[in-house]
Image (cartoon, rainbow, N blue to C red; front, side):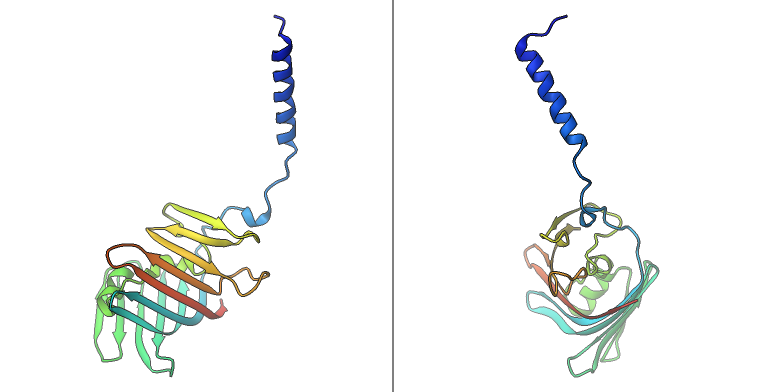
Length: 193
């Protein structure tokens, strides 16, 4: 079967496009798949969370591993506001007034204790610029290939970095829409493992 001149031109164009695609460089390392490893960390900084008239703010110290979280929340002058700890089965908060409350999830506990949901289980990933290992998400990156915006579990997480060379976020702003939108702001002052 003999091809017409336009058909031969189309076949030649297709072969040229395929050959060009075969020589495209690999995507940069910043575009590599996002980690699904839940690595331990110790961080400290400041947090504020607000929904309507309810909210909480203070300095925090957070120790995380895949099985357990411990978070101390204090006033800017260092007085303890709350001590939170727990795992995937139960979480507990000890408040400065002596009350102790428990709940099955971090979201339920923080809403019960502070009147506003703080998604600690998601934040354990998001504070590192990662999506939770399970669950759908979308990511937008900045010019340096770092995560600039992450959407997961109904939350929109916006990242800011200390400078162009920084790989870990310095500030994280979480927003959850609704009749009474929730906003959580985190500034990481100290990080270690």
